[in-house]
Length: 336
Ligand code: NDP
Image (cartoon, rainbow, N blue to C red; front, side, top):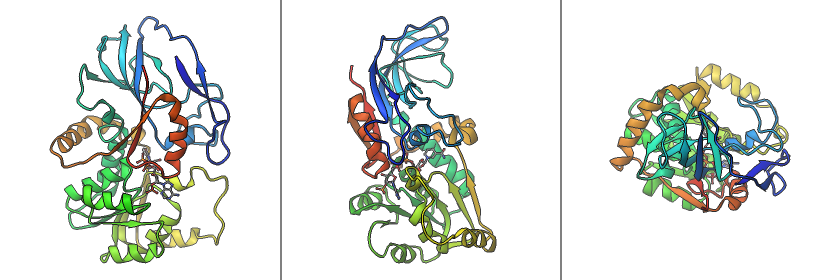
């Protein structure tokens, strides 16, 4: 059983000393447990938070513990009701070849799901995040303008496409021409603005002639600075993620803009609400799964995945995810 354990808490970006590859015996399931063979490991921005012991909504991974992560796995042997050998499941198996589970929080997809790895993306946690954050906090109404950051990523891409289905004008923000072209041409957003290009704030303003009614926040930082003056009265801001800050070691330089933010919230009567997907919206999973399954089957929601081959590629692929190298959902296929 190959497994990555947390070797060292990173300061700034994780590096080659953050995780350590170990080899151990394949664990033996006890009564009431099943043995899972991980086939796909999801790479997600929240993992950076778990590497840190700063206060957060979830406990950190301890030094020497297996790195946490969502997985699609095959049941090898099972003493858990509702799971049998050969079933494919969605679990939190972590960065390793094999994991034990008592079935808590594990979803059984049956023997031959069509796109098993999609359960880690559009049909799973990121998809639920997009759907619940937009519909429950964003409160979209047809004709409104939605801006979504991180527009080519698994959450942002799904947010924008749901926005189009619901009749919104949708403007994405992403890094670089290629991602922006994908966002408009393949995903069908009305526009996409490259935040790395010169003149970004002006280009964003030109793309939202009626202002912004909903801003789905995935990144924070300079992108939010450009969005803030464009928000309309009664704007809603689902605060989903702040990836531009995850590797930060201190607050950014510059004038204190807290009073600008608070003044804008007050004058524009805006609603900003943070959420943690499973804590706030986990109970909506069945409704989400039905709706998103239909949309994906009907081709109304497109999904892009980047398959990384081999567990040993996972650490570098994760560092790249935080740097903007990912183009679509990063999933690691584990070897036999
Ligand atoms: P993404 O694939 O979108 O995240 C990686 C992308 O973030 C990169 O490709 C890059 O896109 C963008 N990015 C990285 N650094 C910056 C930066 N400095 N400024 C702007 N963009 C940057 O991941 P997900 O779709 O999985 O997640 C999106 C967000 O949602 C994350 O913040 C994540 O933490 C959050 N999240 C929150 C959940 C919750 O429960 N609240 C649940 C799931 C996700 P580009 O090349 O375009 O810059």
